[in-house]
Every structure is written in structure tokens, then in C-alpha cells.
Image (tube, rainbow, N blue to C red; front, side, top):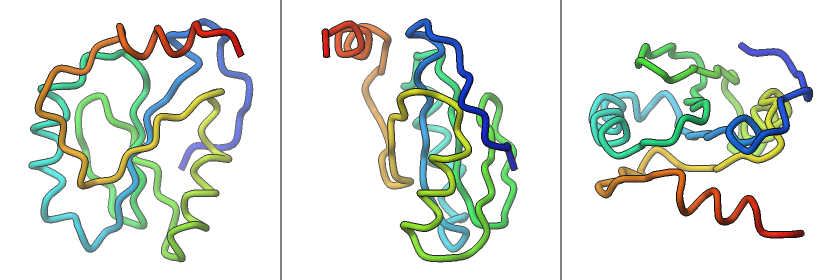
Length: 113
């Protein structure tokens, strides 16, 4: 499990991470999720797959094991551990079928606050 570290680089490419929340009882469709996600996802942000105890191995994906517990407690733990300023939160039933590229996300990140 990664440890808390809030010193992520400040360039847009490194300010954002992707967090995909799942639970171990849905392990049976992780391979299918990865198939669709890896084909569509073309953004070079770190991707974290948040599980409870299982440790799936997918290229380019970091497994973040939170242990068993309530949904919100697990999410809070993961958000504390991920060192990036922004987190794109997805759930395990989000299976992109169209290409996801930097273009849309970069526009959102450069909009003044």
C-alpha cells in the first residue's frame, strides 16, 4: 500500500491521478474492465485500482489495497494516500468504449479557478 505523500509535481501531467474504486467481490470482471480501459485510456496519468485485499496485476495500474470496510472509509483512505492534487474518480462499472485523451482534461485543468 502506498504511503501518504502530498508532494506531487505541479505540471498538469503529474497533478492528476485516476482512482478506480472496486471491491474484492467484483474481482470476476476486473479482466474485462482492464480490457476496455486499456484500449480507450490514452492519458498518461497514474491509475490506481482500489481493492480490499486482492492484488490484481495489470500493466500500468497500481493496486491500492485498503482492507475491508465501509465504502466511504475506504475511499477516504485512498484519497489520503494518493499524492496528486486532483483525482479523477471512477468506479469499477465504468468501462470506456471511446478513446479518452488529454485534450478534454487539459482544457479543464487550465481553466482559471
